[in-house]
Image 1 (cartoon, one colour):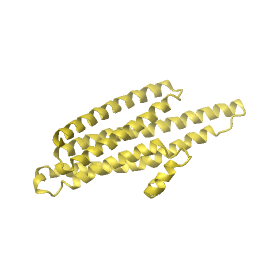
Image 2 (cartoon, one colour; image 1 turned 180 degrees about the vertical axis):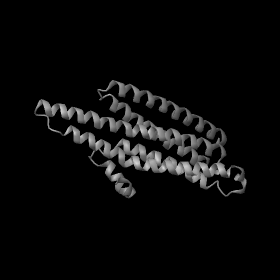
Image 3 (tube, helix red, strand yellow; image 1 turned 120 degrees about the vertical axis):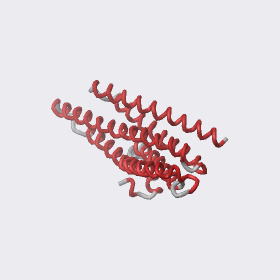
Length: 208
């Protein structure tokens, strides 16, 4: 599992000639950093007298951010597994018409999985960005920069996942599936981008 590797080994895997892990797993890792920073800001707020009135809210956000961090972490490996499934399908024999038909069906099915995984990542990024809005407003104001970096990481994770979704959809034959997933991806992408811009605007207004 990629998540069991050291940081150095993980980086070496990414830098290697192998196409996986690639952008999809890196996007999930970025989102994991975002969730971890969100949890950190919560922990730096909880128990402080100055923030006693928001402690229950921070405890709730902490629970949610930790759940999302677990989801993001799992997707790091899920994305690579989905890509490997696509590559395996492309490697199927295509000598006969029957083999060609089976190969095409397997490729298309694998592509669906490879699309659903980053789309799931995008959805979780949207949830996590809502939590960053809360910690940026109510959390420990000495950690505003950390909240900003959390937003940056989640935005990067979402944008990276969106690229994978949209590229995969261009290779698919099921038009109903394509249009439905494209609509979902575009909606999530817009929501996350809007929230991200709002968070940075508010943080910059407080810091500078």
